[in-house]
Length: 203
Image (cartoon, rainbow, N blue to C red):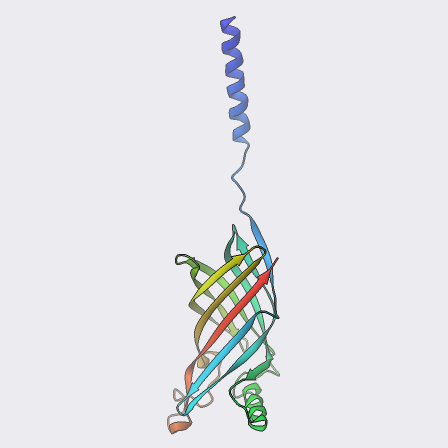
């Protein structure tokens, strides 16, 4: 009788062990969130010797990849024909300025109507703080960029916000740059400009 109980126990252990062997690693929960273009925006700021200009560019679309509740990737397309200046109050000068920004001296929007940012890496920095690394494509030219950001999740929504400094000459935007034109004096426009992105997405 004791022998039968012992054998039965061995069989039970073997069944449990065999079952455990076929249980694979726990799968991560990955989800794709769609960008809300009405709540998302890109703010830009460019400076020159005599002042600065700033404005917005609208998002055309995009997605964020979230794994186990954490942002891991994303791709965002910006409509360069939507570029606006909010600091110029004179309608005529504003229109002239935006026309110049869309020309081949700057963003060549007729040839390159969209720009794109792709997240390749997100490094946690504690709390809501992260460091985002990705590829920025402007005028068909892609360069890597890394910048600090914050990421917040709220139910089925996720929001990422951060500011990056870009060197416009790396995207073949050389107009008014002292790096290429030495004797332009106070007409010089600084190479670095900032883009501040607020990206809101939901399932």
